[in-house]
Image (cartoon, rainbow, N blue to C red; front, side):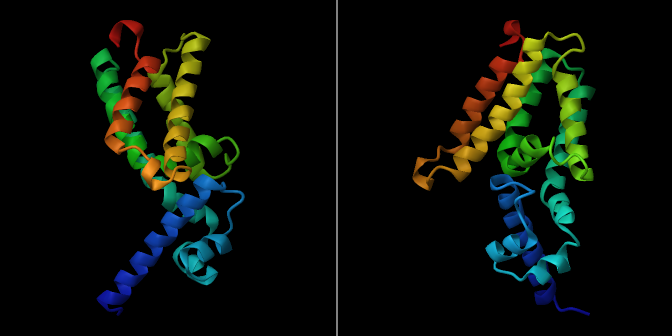
Length: 196
């Protein structure tokens, strides 16, 4: 039976590999990332990656699956709340917090979802995004409203990742400032004009 330090070491390695993979998938893309590159960036061997994750797809599942689980729960709660104006306001605030806490995962499945459709975890993400779109936009919503949703989602995910990956630490804005700005912008794009 492994000792506690061995278990802790394995858990730490799995967490480190998952985080490095998430960073690679978000910045260079899933298709352009290899297990060897992930291992090299994390400071492990490729065999260590394969010890923890059977494939690159399994690593993708581990990296973005928890964010998809949370998105599905947020969406379920929003639908259960009745999609009222107040429910939309609450949802937008929770959604922004979700984006801030899961920016790399969301960026990965939003921006690569159409190219990676054959991967089950991506199909789950695509399904959650379709559910989100259906919940935000009415079935007979005009094209402009549907486009606002797409611009809001893709723009928010890009802005958050760009802030984290392209700016030097001293250029980054505090998350609270980003949160307030993002809630304001998404409210303008996604709430009815009379509810802003």
